[in-house]
Length: 431
Ligand SMILES: C[S@@+](CC[C@H](N)C(=O)[O-])C[C@H]1O[C@@H](n2cnc3c(N)ncnc32)[C@H](O)[C@@H]1O
Image (tube, rainbow, N blue to C red; front, side, top):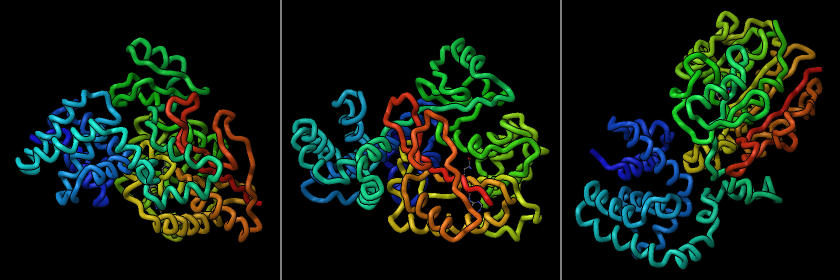
């Protein structure tokens, strides 16, 4: 059986080979139990969140490059633990030394021991030297830092820092099944610390597996960030309306739409496996599945699946870099390349152009991304408006607590009262 540090290091390495962290963690899982799995996940998430700094510290500590990628990553995991966890430093060093001896080679022991102990002795000086570089200081690739700096000249550092915070576990209450007050009481009775936010959300004091929470199996709530909870109310779909959810999976917003009104939804997604999760969620939340058509298809090619009847509402929750949700998915910072932003932007415009003709006159289309990059948000929307005389951008009010500028919501710093991810919304009405 491999040590947790080794499994975390292997998961991190898989991310740099292009895997999503969730999949990488499943691949390194050895079924040794929940505690070990939780620790491996915490180490891998934390190491990736702070990769820019720990990687730079490894380079600074090593007098010659460490050729073995596993050895290098094991040292980075230990540095993450030393700088960002409360585990006793000498226990961290001992475990890293043992992990390197077992997983790399016995002779690696002395190198790991020497580097980590030197770090403990000279931490301040080493950090002062290393943190002069942007990548180490902010823990993002340089292209990402440059983009945020140019999109947010006034507050780029706080946008970057907020993306490195830990996100809370936020729940959306299914008002067809439960009330906020009743669910709070159930949580309290079970000794679970939760706080009511607005009228339909709860934020948990300590994240925990959702399946263990009272009410989950009864469909009383969904896991959904506050920013994502803005979408369905903004779209303002009433009973009997025909709604296209063009990029529906896993169904967080489809189910919210169905909770709020008796709408007829076409839930479309290009990925059949992910689409199956929409159906599962509709079922778990006890929503009426006769109101939903689940269709596998390309939103950019309606000829494949559209019956020519216009929609009253369209939600286009487009695929994006997910740069607004890096606090939940820190692997995204390192998996994406600079060129991905333009690739996503082209795809977003393709989907927007293809969905617009499907909207009835007077109807509304909500364009959404979980990105903070203007190239995926304001830029394609302004370009679209420039080319479509029949499109009008609504400046309808967002929920008062949802801090945003022109539809751009930014990630909140850790512990904020209204704690949200970065998201973008543009509501377009057809004249
Ligand atoms: C941001 S996620 C949607 C999240 C979802 N709206 C929710 O709230 O749970 C984007 C989804 O778009 C899907 N997708 C990507 N390209 C697509 C396309 N061309 N047509 C339809 N769906 C697409 C992906 O499979 C993914 O499930």
